[in-house]
Image (cartoon, rainbow, N blue to C red; front, side, top):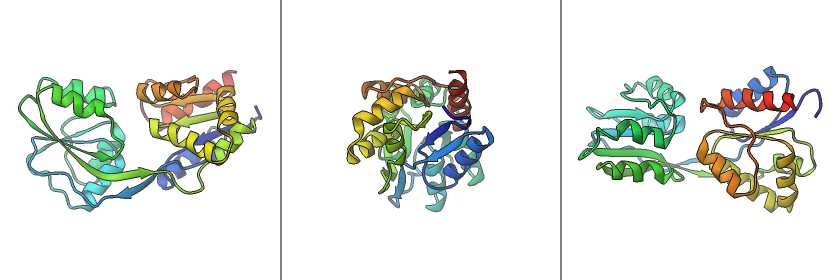
Length: 245
């Protein structure tokens, strides 16, 4: 490890990457931005006839606003403070943010309230079935609207090449999809096995248990899962683990 550890981040190529780079620089790290997700809006809007509407991301909140979604009397629920903040900035009142920022956490929060209720889930095309299955099991009538698709950008994979060369000190994964796309990009470059080995020599930090499980299934040893499910907590915990080595 150098004095400034090289830390890969995989956030979309917008203000989220800019913020991640600024945070890592403030922690005296060398950021390795390698966006693994690009957003393709579908043009759809959440339904307006539900009792509850669940938004799972900042991107979903912004696209709902762009589509002039009017929830009316619908109770708006957000998974995580960043999503809730984006909804409020877009002018929506947020009725519920679960204590656990996850699909399972939202199911637990709504479990006793949604029997017989109509629940709209508005999110990406890669949403976890934990949310929809859990709400169905709780007796809700669930409808899902795909607001956007998540694709891997052309040219992604610089971080995989650096991992394969042993030139990466940490990687910060924010979703299962970023893990999968990282390895897909490595495979396209012909360095999948070497990138896996490089990751397992580095610190791997992930947000949430589902991402940890995906990484483990793909042969990646996870070192850090922060209690707070947001990027700043992830970055600080991952960098601290690098410096503790």
